[in-house]
Image (cartoon, rainbow, N blue to C red; front, side, top):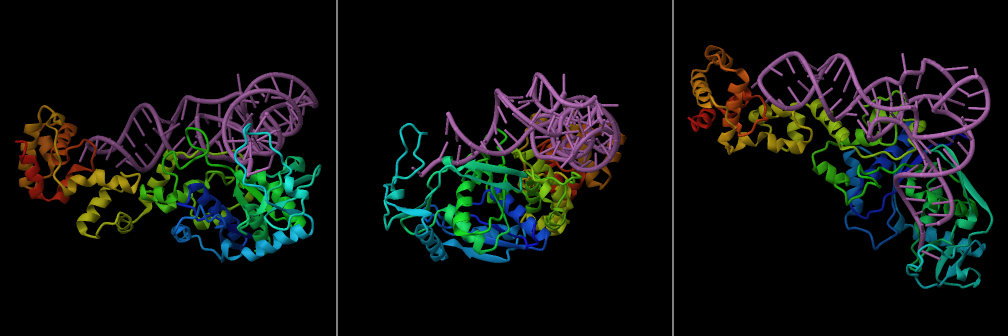
Length: 430
RNA sequence: GGCCCUGUCGUCUAGUGGUCUAGGACACUUGGUUCUCAUCCAAGAGAUCGUGAGUCCAAAUCUCACCGGGGCCA
């Protein structure tokens, strides 16, 4: 293979909040290019104006920015219509495509039997939509660089695909070929769902006289309940996951390992190490399942790596000494940023205490604790002196102070709350 | 229905004919640290490599069939 510069692109449609699978495609395309000092292009595929969402483009840029993905070039397809129109017209002129004026068809009754050859293909019309004139009895194929396998089809199963719609906007099939060629994309990386339309693209490449780039189809991320991961089942939008309290670093690390693996099974990656270690042969062939537990684990790992200041910042807290103390108590105890509130609410408001949670000796425990705190003594000494069971003693304190059984260490918590407030909460139950 | 991709512990995976009585990670179980929870540490359980044939001295690794999973179909 000749030594051409590697150039990849991420080509999302601005149709709504970015899906975690799209983001993964961006990471892979980015790493593939940057591993060899190639270029990474961001291309907005906005040729379906009906589905476009306002602010969609800005949202894509913003999200990529959060993950530190930077692009070398930026294009918008709707600004390039001329290019697609010319290509389509050329194909018509050269007998590789034809105008079609068929009415938009409805779903057919039997669902499946369909006529692959369009009735307009030999009418020599001079206006309308432009469709590809697919030949009969030919073979088309390519070698997929993700699954590392030659894949081929007979053109007899390929329909006369629409290339240019009547509104002069291209379909994906035309735009993707024209753009990838024009932008000198060396490696096309896309979702597995595009595999079946690859023969169409191959034909378009051929008729336009373009070199076919390397093409690879990524696995689909699956839902634990089966089927492709979808927006319907829980939060799969990148923004949704961020809102849930997952750190970008954790999301990145988790998602690149769904469908790609290094030979040594290393678990922890950041953008730089991923780019450095990236290797095409690490692509997986079968569909991975989106596993929350693993994501949570990664998130915990990255939360624990943060400095107190960084964590305070991520939690949108003021950098006060009280908050620092609180945050340092919960850093080992949260899996997601959103766990913070439930774990620490007792610091900010008096808890509701269910007295049924107390042990049988709680009054004795609380009384001695109050004495101890008033005289500023180490509570462990109080426990020993009175021959209390350590666990029971602190649990009663915990219930009185926080109202719940799972909390940060209670001595430190009382220190943060302040002696006065701590005593007040204990005295309530005497 | 047609076409295409795919199949190693529950999950993510290592593995490319012998070193595999199949390795790692998450989850799980147990023990240790500890005022609870969590962290951390240690140990354990968990996969006859989808099934059945075949090739070979030798197969998770090659071939075929079947079955399962996934995708696409103006």
